[in-house]
Image 1 (cartoon, rainbow, N blue to C red):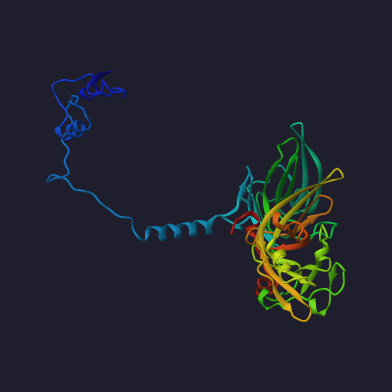
Image 2 (cartoon, helix red, strand yellow; image 1 turned 90 degrees about the vertical axis):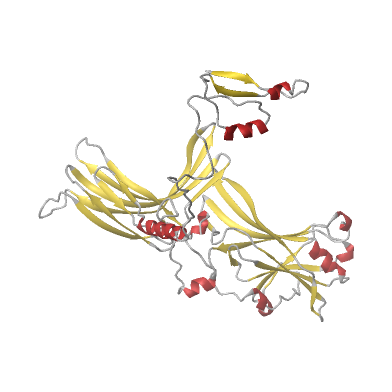
Length: 462
């Protein structure tokens, strides 16, 4: 039980609107009192007297007695280094192991410890071992590798399969009781090795990365699995052990590209065709931009956008874009158009379901153009340079599975005049499809064209 002691502090507040203050003390208050060292701070807060306690509280002081020692310490400068070494050692010892009652599947340490499952890249070998402690009553043991794509639609709260396809499949008979042998083994240790294919089964499409794409009412799962099935004789329980693996391929542009600052500026098109391809523009793809609302004041003005070839770029690196202006009626028009232009990098994901294409457009980055300058005096041609960057570092990749899904990228240049310039300059818009890769051509060349290992940037890890 506790009793309430009304203090003089409350009496001083009777004429105010503030609520009363109470102090709490034990109901067992004998002759003992609280030490003065604790009462003085209470009096400073407005309490007239201190509550009494039984037994009495000890006196506290900052000065230690002859038998007391003040303990002090500081963090060791080697503590963080030791922790890092210990974590590195633990990471190197981490292995992906999966067990059932009789089997142990060991996938090694691929991708550990930053991924939930073993991770592999383009052309990697999936290696591991399988241990079986007992083969009693076992009919056969089968090891299977499989990649699949599956569309799952949700309708009225119920999930239903909207289509599926096997991307590749490989199986291996580890043990069979029907196989003649000199002696019947009681246990088994089996090492397996399998090279991931580069293309889908019965299709020219490259093997897509592990993915989970979520759309309103429909999902797309691309999964790769390793599974071991143990079949037993009679009505005994079937036994399974396995894991999902991550396929995260590294990609690079198909050909070398000169650095952006060493490019020769693209030349304007001499004709009205949508694209110009000649020796002068061999390093560029030039496309004519059509004005959405032609104006008589600029009817002879030719506006083009140019992208460096090949149209394949490393993700999260600047992509140069040029604006070309020919037959400008005035030197101010190129600057007006360039200052009202934007460059956008988009990721376009499309799912195909029941004859319909479901699109999703995601903005990855935006850029703009600098001041226009006269690049060809004799032809009265002006050039404005710009760039755009976006996406995940080493984590964007163009891919598709025919009839199911496609992931593409595009650069869009738009000119939208401000209200003050409407009727002075026209609106323009042009979209060019491009390819994004996880690595550059130079990085692939340094490794003799072999980009092995998983591209962890695809799942947002470095």
